[in-house]
Length: 136
Image 1 (cartoon, rainbow, N blue to C red):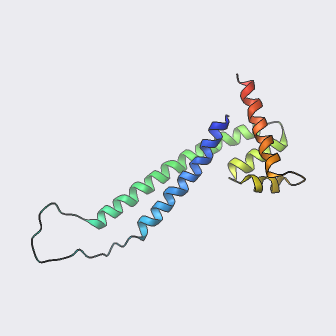
Image 2: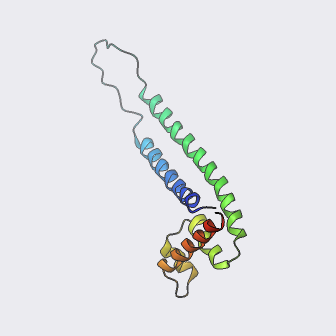
Image 3: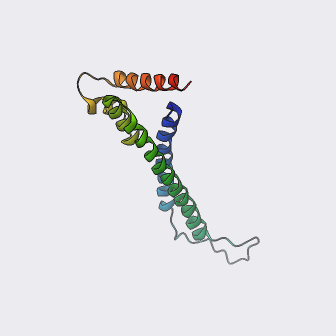
């Protein structure tokens, strides 16, 4: 597992949240807005705003479903990797950071002791650095 893969995994969670917010915004739009009727014939094609909104919602929902499925697959792979780590402290750090999506402050709190967010982040970075050196 590389630092880049782990970073991409966290980005995936943010991407999912972004699209969930977009879906909420799309659903807030009113389906009941009446078209302006002037009594005059109009040129051009017919428009169906309700169908357009439903289609937009469906596209976003499908995107979210694909991303969530990708996230589940990656989470399984990361959990397998975390379980293979011999150092229990590093296991806890990686699990809290990548499976529970915790901030460095929250990870340090979870570990307890005299651990600070910086010390926990440095342990994380050192471990990944040694790992990448071993793979060269």
